[in-house]
Amino acid sequence: AHRKPLPAFDGRGVLSDGTEVPLYSNVGNGKAAQTAAEGKAEGVGLFRTEFAFLNREEEPSVEEQTVEYKAVFDAFPGRHVVVRTLDAGADKPLPFLTDASEPNPALGVRGYRTDWTSPGVLGRQLEAISAAASESTADVWVMAPMISTAPEAGDFARMLEEAGLRTHGVMIETPSAAVTARSILDEVDFVSLGTNDLTQYTMAADRLLGPLAELNNPWQPAVLRMIELTVQGARESQESTGRTKSVSVCGEAAADPALAVTLVGLGVNALSMNTRSLPAVAAVLKSVTLEEAQRVAAKVMAARSAEDAKEAARAELPILD
Ligand code: PEP
Ligand code: MG
Image (cartoon, rainbow, N blue to C red; front, side, top):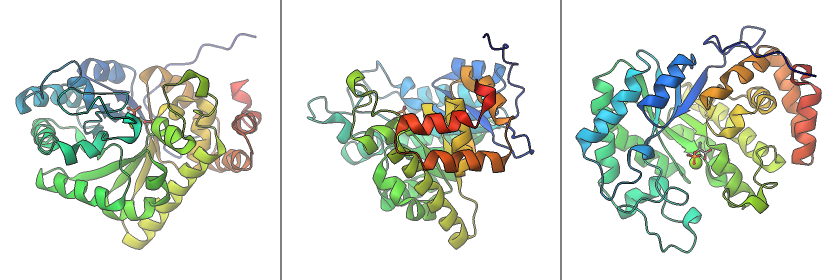
């Protein structure tokens, strides 16, 4: 049977009971941001800034960086844009920042950790983000990749404050961050789950290795449990601080329609994905109430394998047949 072609995304992620689930795009440069805006993304949930640095022998100047960042902000005037600071290392090596001879690059100096070995680069990037943000109307949020502890999140938040950047966040990509999400969220305003890395680190399976694809699957019960723990931590932090703490997902998991429903059922507030996936995710979300999504999530959480988890979700979502 052929499925009916999906209607284009109308620019509003919403469940059938009216619950809003903003749907954002993942982008790497101004051109991708324009495509995202044409695809009616509600904003940018992940701006991978390392694209501005790739294939460079040296660090780009603050002025050059400012131009790159502004191009993305200008595609979303008045909208939400989450900038991720440089995620160099492991699958994204940079000659001026990372050490190619590390024996285990995925467990090495990558992401936020490069600030310890090359101090200054992150500070200059924040200066450029701040300059670009002040020249645009986008609502700019900034987050750090590869965070493992609450003190790291606190240090990052203070760097953002010094740079005049107001909304502070970090990515949850490691099991250590997921299980300490409450203390991390006591330090910052939001978290975004990077399920690609969270899966790799939870399952101890290199995300680049084909033979490990079965482990590298966000439907794995252990990965779903990490997501659930993160949401619980956010709720606890919200109660103790009295401040709103948002949890989004910006890994590939958000683009899988059945998983998107599950994530919303677990308590995730917003989803960010490649622009092409917006129509399919919007359509499935529109077919369920929040209560139904929670029921799907409960069934999924009772599964003992990735396959059973996916099956359990699909059985509840006839729209995906
Ligand atoms: C992730 O790890 O899920 C993520 C969004 O970041 P990246 O894929 O760029 O590592
Ligand atoms: Mg990542």
